[in-house]
Image (cartoon, rainbow over all chains, first blue to last red; front, top):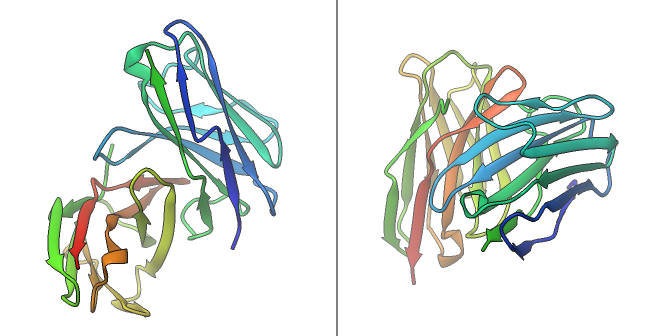
Length: 118
Length: 109
Protein backbone atom coordinates (compact mmCIF):
# COMPACT_ATOMS: atom_id res chain seq x y z
CA UNK A 1 0.00 0.00 0.00
CA UNK A 2 0.93 3.63 -0.30
CA UNK A 3 3.16 5.07 2.39
CA UNK A 4 2.93 8.47 4.00
CA UNK A 5 5.76 9.53 6.27
CA UNK A 6 5.34 12.19 8.89
CA UNK A 7 8.20 13.82 10.75
CA UNK A 8 8.91 14.42 13.53
CA UNK A 9 6.82 11.86 15.37
CA UNK A 10 7.07 13.91 18.52
CA UNK A 11 8.43 17.31 19.42
CA UNK A 12 8.69 19.37 22.58
CA UNK A 13 9.22 23.09 22.28
CA UNK A 14 9.16 26.23 24.35
CA UNK A 15 6.25 28.61 24.20
CA UNK A 16 6.74 31.24 21.52
CA UNK A 17 8.81 29.12 19.16
CA UNK A 18 7.71 27.77 15.79
CA UNK A 19 7.57 24.11 14.88
CA UNK A 20 7.51 22.57 11.41
CA UNK A 21 5.96 19.19 10.71
CA UNK A 22 6.59 17.44 7.41
CA UNK A 23 4.31 15.06 5.57
CA UNK A 24 5.74 13.09 2.66
CA UNK A 25 4.16 10.64 0.28
CA UNK A 26 6.94 8.16 -0.32
CA UNK A 27 5.75 6.11 -3.24
CA UNK A 28 3.09 8.16 -4.94
CA UNK A 29 2.36 11.71 -5.97
CA UNK A 30 -0.12 13.33 -3.66
CA UNK A 31 -2.19 15.94 -5.39
CA UNK A 32 -4.03 16.68 -2.18
CA UNK A 33 -3.00 16.45 1.44
CA UNK A 34 -5.12 17.00 4.51
CA UNK A 35 -4.03 18.12 7.96
CA UNK A 36 -5.92 17.01 11.04
CA UNK A 37 -5.66 17.79 14.72
CA UNK A 38 -6.65 15.30 17.39
CA UNK A 39 -7.07 15.84 21.11
CA UNK A 40 -6.77 12.90 23.52
CA UNK A 41 -9.55 10.37 23.13
CA UNK A 42 -11.30 12.54 20.59
CA UNK A 43 -11.88 12.37 16.88
CA UNK A 44 -9.87 13.98 14.12
CA UNK A 45 -10.66 17.57 13.32
CA UNK A 46 -9.84 18.68 9.81
CA UNK A 47 -7.70 21.79 9.86
CA UNK A 48 -6.98 22.40 6.19
CA UNK A 49 -6.84 20.94 2.72
CA UNK A 50 -3.60 21.41 0.86
CA UNK A 51 -3.29 21.21 -2.93
CA UNK A 52 0.08 21.17 -4.61
CA UNK A 53 1.09 24.57 -5.91
CA UNK A 54 -1.83 26.48 -4.47
CA UNK A 55 -2.85 28.02 -1.18
CA UNK A 56 -4.32 25.76 1.45
CA UNK A 57 -8.02 25.88 2.21
CA UNK A 58 -8.56 26.25 5.92
CA UNK A 59 -11.55 25.08 7.88
CA UNK A 60 -13.63 27.56 9.76
CA UNK A 61 -12.06 28.56 13.04
CA UNK A 62 -8.52 27.54 12.06
CA UNK A 63 -6.10 30.47 12.08
CA UNK A 64 -4.23 30.71 8.80
CA UNK A 65 -1.43 32.78 10.27
CA UNK A 66 -1.05 30.39 13.17
CA UNK A 67 -0.93 27.19 11.17
CA UNK A 68 1.04 27.78 7.99
CA UNK A 69 0.66 25.08 5.38
CA UNK A 70 2.89 24.73 2.35
CA UNK A 71 2.49 22.12 -0.40
CA UNK A 72 5.39 22.94 -2.65
CA UNK A 73 5.72 19.59 -4.36
CA UNK A 74 3.62 16.55 -5.14
CA UNK A 75 5.31 14.60 -2.37
CA UNK A 76 5.70 17.10 0.45
CA UNK A 77 3.42 19.24 2.55
CA UNK A 78 4.50 21.06 5.69
CA UNK A 79 2.58 22.43 8.65
CA UNK A 80 4.27 25.13 10.67
CA UNK A 81 2.81 26.01 14.05
CA UNK A 82 3.95 29.57 14.57
CA UNK A 83 4.55 31.12 17.98
CA UNK A 84 3.35 27.96 19.64
CA UNK A 85 1.56 28.08 22.97
CA UNK A 86 0.59 25.31 25.38
CA UNK A 87 -2.94 25.21 23.96
CA UNK A 88 -1.43 24.19 20.61
CA UNK A 89 -0.22 20.97 22.19
CA UNK A 90 -1.93 18.20 20.30
CA UNK A 91 -1.55 15.27 17.94
CA UNK A 92 -1.31 16.42 14.32
CA UNK A 93 -1.96 13.93 11.53
CA UNK A 94 -1.58 14.35 7.81
CA UNK A 95 -3.16 12.31 5.07
CA UNK A 96 -2.59 12.19 1.35
CA UNK A 97 -4.48 11.10 -1.70
CA UNK A 98 -3.20 10.47 -5.20
CA UNK A 99 -6.61 10.76 -6.74
CA UNK A 100 -7.38 14.21 -5.43
CA UNK A 101 -10.46 12.83 -3.75
CA UNK A 102 -10.77 11.95 -0.09
CA UNK A 103 -13.88 9.86 -0.38
CA UNK A 104 -12.69 6.98 -2.49
CA UNK A 105 -10.85 4.99 0.15
CA UNK A 106 -7.55 5.99 -1.38
CA UNK A 107 -6.59 8.19 1.55
CA UNK A 108 -3.38 7.32 3.36
CA UNK A 109 -2.37 8.64 6.76
CA UNK A 110 0.93 9.52 8.32
CA UNK A 111 1.78 8.21 11.77
CA UNK A 112 1.09 11.55 13.39
CA UNK A 113 3.20 14.10 15.23
CA UNK A 114 2.71 14.79 18.91
CA UNK A 115 3.47 18.39 19.78
CA UNK A 116 4.01 19.44 23.38
CA UNK A 117 4.48 23.13 24.06
CA UNK A 118 5.94 23.97 27.44
CA UNK B 1 -18.87 19.72 11.79
CA UNK B 2 -18.66 16.05 12.62
CA UNK B 3 -21.15 14.08 10.63
CA UNK B 4 -20.59 10.56 11.84
CA UNK B 5 -21.29 9.66 15.42
CA UNK B 6 -20.34 6.33 16.86
CA UNK B 7 -21.68 4.32 19.72
CA UNK B 8 -20.67 2.97 22.07
CA UNK B 9 -17.93 5.42 22.97
CA UNK B 10 -16.01 2.61 24.60
CA UNK B 11 -16.32 -1.15 24.46
CA UNK B 12 -14.48 -3.75 26.49
CA UNK B 13 -14.79 -7.43 25.58
CA UNK B 14 -13.01 -10.71 26.07
CA UNK B 15 -10.85 -12.23 23.38
CA UNK B 16 -12.92 -14.42 21.11
CA UNK B 17 -16.11 -12.40 21.51
CA UNK B 18 -17.63 -10.30 18.76
CA UNK B 19 -17.51 -6.51 18.85
CA UNK B 20 -20.17 -4.34 17.26
CA UNK B 21 -19.80 -0.61 16.74
CA UNK B 22 -22.43 1.66 15.29
CA UNK B 23 -22.22 4.88 13.36
CA UNK B 24 -24.94 7.37 12.49
CA UNK B 25 -24.68 10.22 10.04
CA UNK B 26 -26.83 13.12 9.04
CA UNK B 27 -26.70 13.79 5.31
CA UNK B 28 -26.86 11.66 2.18
CA UNK B 29 -23.64 9.94 1.23
CA UNK B 30 -21.94 8.22 -1.69
CA UNK B 31 -20.05 5.90 0.60
CA UNK B 32 -19.03 5.38 4.19
CA UNK B 33 -15.64 4.28 5.39
CA UNK B 34 -14.30 2.72 8.57
CA UNK B 35 -10.84 3.41 9.90
CA UNK B 36 -8.78 2.02 12.74
CA UNK B 37 -6.31 3.92 14.90
CA UNK B 38 -3.90 2.31 17.30
CA UNK B 39 -3.07 4.49 20.29
CA UNK B 40 -0.84 7.38 19.28
CA UNK B 41 -0.62 6.29 15.66
CA UNK B 42 -2.10 7.24 12.32
CA UNK B 43 -5.27 5.86 10.80
CA UNK B 44 -5.56 2.75 8.71
CA UNK B 45 -8.35 2.30 6.20
CA UNK B 46 -10.39 -0.82 6.91
CA UNK B 47 -13.31 -0.92 4.53
CA UNK B 48 -15.46 1.25 2.28
CA UNK B 49 -19.12 0.53 1.67
CA UNK B 50 -20.99 2.31 -1.11
CA UNK B 51 -24.43 3.76 -0.70
CA UNK B 52 -25.95 1.07 -2.94
CA UNK B 53 -24.46 -1.72 -0.86
CA UNK B 54 -26.08 -3.14 2.27
CA UNK B 55 -23.34 -5.37 3.56
CA UNK B 56 -19.68 -5.94 2.96
CA UNK B 57 -17.16 -8.39 4.35
CA UNK B 58 -13.41 -8.29 4.71
CA UNK B 59 -11.83 -11.08 6.70
CA UNK B 60 -13.23 -10.87 10.23
CA UNK B 61 -14.89 -7.54 9.48
CA UNK B 62 -18.48 -7.15 8.47
CA UNK B 63 -19.94 -3.76 7.69
CA UNK B 64 -23.59 -2.98 7.14
CA UNK B 65 -25.17 0.17 5.82
CA UNK B 66 -28.76 1.30 6.18
CA UNK B 67 -29.21 4.48 4.19
CA UNK B 68 -32.84 4.81 5.26
CA UNK B 69 -31.73 5.06 8.88
CA UNK B 70 -28.47 6.80 8.01
CA UNK B 71 -26.52 4.31 10.02
CA UNK B 72 -23.75 1.78 9.65
CA UNK B 73 -22.31 -0.92 11.85
CA UNK B 74 -18.92 -2.55 12.05
CA UNK B 75 -18.75 -6.08 13.40
CA UNK B 76 -15.45 -7.66 14.32
CA UNK B 77 -15.84 -11.38 14.83
CA UNK B 78 -13.66 -13.59 17.02
CA UNK B 79 -11.86 -10.59 18.42
CA UNK B 80 -8.19 -10.68 19.32
CA UNK B 81 -6.15 -8.62 21.75
CA UNK B 82 -4.49 -7.03 18.70
CA UNK B 83 -7.87 -5.58 17.69
CA UNK B 84 -7.59 -3.17 20.62
CA UNK B 85 -7.77 0.27 19.01
CA UNK B 86 -10.09 3.16 18.23
CA UNK B 87 -12.45 2.75 15.33
CA UNK B 88 -13.88 5.65 13.36
CA UNK B 89 -16.49 5.90 10.68
CA UNK B 90 -16.02 8.60 8.08
CA UNK B 91 -18.33 10.21 5.57
CA UNK B 92 -17.59 12.68 2.86
CA UNK B 93 -18.42 16.36 2.91
CA UNK B 94 -17.46 17.61 -0.52
CA UNK B 95 -13.89 16.46 -1.01
CA UNK B 96 -13.28 16.12 2.70
CA UNK B 97 -13.70 13.23 5.06
CA UNK B 98 -15.50 13.93 8.30
CA UNK B 99 -14.80 11.51 11.10
CA UNK B 100 -17.12 10.42 13.84
CA UNK B 101 -16.25 10.54 17.51
CA UNK B 102 -14.97 6.98 17.43
CA UNK B 103 -15.33 3.86 19.54
CA UNK B 104 -12.48 2.79 21.78
CA UNK B 105 -12.34 -0.99 21.70
CA UNK B 106 -10.42 -2.95 24.29
CA UNK B 107 -10.06 -6.68 23.84
CA UNK B 108 -8.91 -8.44 26.98
CA UNK B 109 -6.87 -11.62 26.69
